[in-house]
Image (cartoon, rainbow, N blue to C red):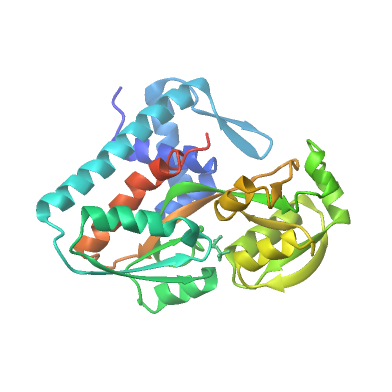
Length: 306
Ligand code: PGA
């Protein structure tokens, strides 16, 4: 097969996102350019790689095979990049990292691993919501950002590194905790606590409700994940949060995840920097480290979900 690396990497992005539009956004290409690369790859392979069912696209059996191959190559390339950074040496330097408040539930573990590998790099970490992160990127105040998918129209390079499932949480004594396959319409009778404006979690939740055509009651607005969790525990309403924020509470049975149809809402975390920014060696090494190690940290495959 005379496939090119370009075709494979474009296909890989479409397969990860299960969307031609989102792949085009991530790669800063037009949608026809993405479709063309995939079509050429399909011609080389001699079989269709995607099938369209309604608005969704799925990998065919051949597509799954090619996806396995493209994932292995992407991983290998990222690892090679990392080894080369090491050869060039990342002895010192400063690194400014900014992360979404929701990412901060696992970011310190990533930073700890990175610091162990590159003990000479001095790191500053700032934590804020999505809107704050976009401002920081606009103002060139940070090297690398870990956040939800940034808006496509900004001049940013954004690479997905881990799944971010959003789940419905309830206090453990809520009657719905015993139910399976809860219909979405049932949520209309519930009150939901809301994150502040500017939060990526809130945007995702509102978009999801609008897409599904449901409008549950909205309760208090709170500006941290911790406040939402405490509020839900106290019975002020239900919440929609990233699964990464509630590991401890689920283990201690202080909160429960409800089995609602169409959940979890599947999002991804992205490592982001400004397009055209010359990343220092330390920043390059951090970017590679996140792309390679974050999945392993959470027992998830980077950009998986297929
Ligand atoms: P946030 O998380 O809700 O803390 O802004 C970022 C995101 O989910 O995009």
